[in-house]
Length: 134
Ligand SMILES: Cc1cc2nc3c(=O)[nH]c(=O)nc-3n(C[C@H](O)[C@H](O)[C@H](O)COP(=O)(O)O)c2cc1C
Image (tube, rainbow, N blue to C red; front, side, top):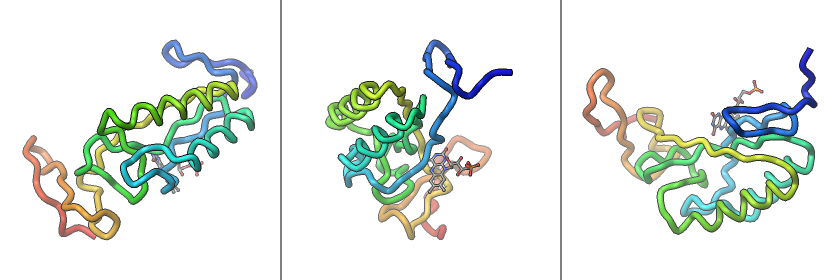
């Protein structure tokens, strides 16, 4: 039987074990979506604690798709340096890190974000405002 402590490989990504931190929004990102020192510390501690793979909390790819306050974002080049530092910090502790890209779409709630969310109209490809939700 495969042990949790055995190496694993996911599409070429080699993990030292099978402990994976599921993507989890922490509400710890900076206002512009960049990783803060709190996130670096949290993910570093997870890697130190022998978590083989940390999946970062979901990151919006467009400000209009932001789902929650202090959510990670990946919508501007200015954030690259912060993510490089985060990745390096996790690697130095022997862990691997992945990003989960997201667009909040129809699941956005105006009670949590200040913009008018845009979401899929269902079957069609057009977009509709869904700012009346929640
Ligand atoms: C506060 C919170 C934030 C979460 N953020 C994400 C996320 O960013 N992406 C995701 O795919 N799942 C997210 N989840 C789901 C978790 O990653 C996880 O799949 C879920 O809590 C079930 O895990 P469990 O069966 O170990 O309880 C979140 C869950 C919670 C409670």
